Image (cartoon, rainbow, N blue to C red; front, side, top):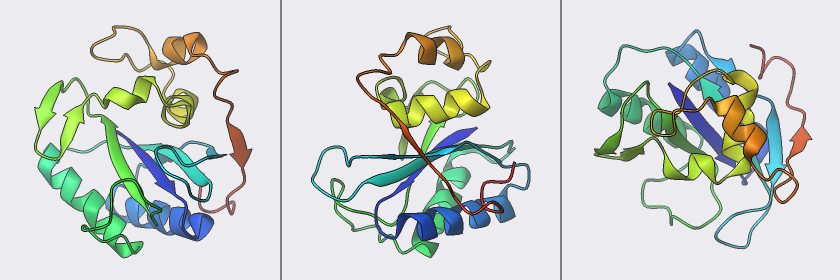
Length: 164
């Protein structure tokens, strides 16, 4: 399972808190490098984004509930506006070979292939994973992506936060 994480409200603090909470729930958590990028869809402070990967036997609905609990722990309310600043946004990108519309998620996440801040970090930790509808690896998809038009700016997190 791969999940995008992003914040533009106290982003370093929020991302570090989310990684800690996710690691408690999913001990084999792998964390990509973190990147700063402008807010997409609204005006606001830059986001810090990364991707995490982990194994789980939980069904998708249970994972989504865990992700919402982590978002809440970081200060996100369920009634927060969709296109607005946020303390934490956790979005499932891929869950194995699941394809389709599910309550709370569309898999694979459609904007995985159009957002550098999702595809690039995922390629850093899972380049050999095959996208279930494109039948190409994430690394191949990232290599073909227009990285010049969508540059990523790497940012440092406290060393214990992103420890793989």
